Image 1: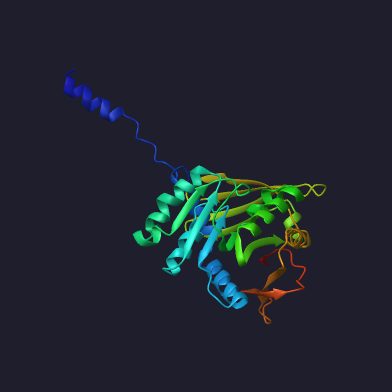
Image 2: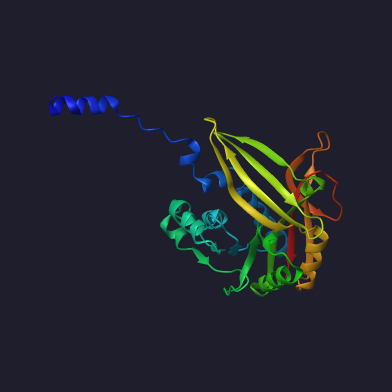
Length: 283
């Protein structure tokens, strides 16, 4: 057999390269942003609420547990006078945000964002108008001392009339070991509450993604949290020295009973299976 014939036979017998599944090529951070975050909605709520309470526009914002820094980018994109500092302890997610989110900003806007890989409890920054602690990440603090210490540090980092914005979730489904599935374009998002210990309030949660080709990205993100209640959070904020703590509850459509996406100050909420609200703590 000639060398040419041998090469032809080798090509014929070569096994086709296996095509990678969608899960193998998926970007978990991009999927997270598409399924979990709504930075435009958060920006409008924070900016509008601050202006209403303080009669001025907030300019300088710090985003704790910033992850991919999506909110930082939204903040500076909205106004050329705005600045943002993003803080996260995970270098991998900060690098992703730098590459994928900050790079989409105009050069001038990019200069108004600073990303810091630091522990939020040991952080020292210039006083800011607003601190954000969104996506429930503060729940990684398992004790009153640790969460209270963090909240005290936040208060110190605010200007005289600064405000801390936090989100919280609850409802009787929040304590169940369940999976909630939501379809998005090109994938399905699953939020799993794997375990909950009612004695110490600790819970373990995961985010999974499923794709049309049958492949799965299991445990794309995992969290071990303490499930803090609204009364506990309000008490801790007051103990940290905040002058006023207000819960902003989602309004409901009178006809359907469904949420409208509008959040207003409230002293009474409905006993729903699941809810998300905002805590607004004024220095």
